[in-house]
Image (cartoon, rainbow, N blue to C red; front, side):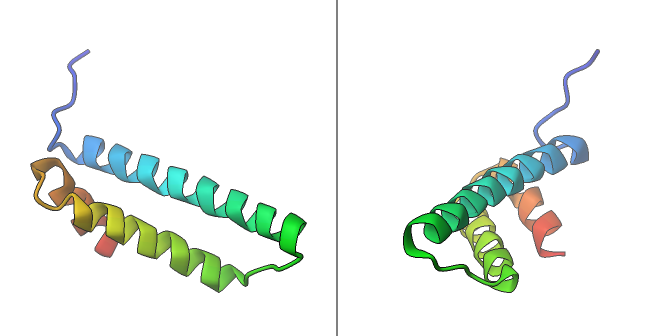
Length: 77
């Protein structure tokens, strides 16, 4: 089976999925710990905003790398 190049749509989508999954797990875990230790729960809209902001920051920080141009376009659609 041929290996996908870094600029193929499938590899860009895979990279974006990995970043989104990592960010989602991190923020859900953070929400869980905040609820357990501080008895404070953030609304779902705030959680989604934080995940979106983190993904935009990750992609923007790496915008000079060729591999990160297409995921940015996919995420900002």
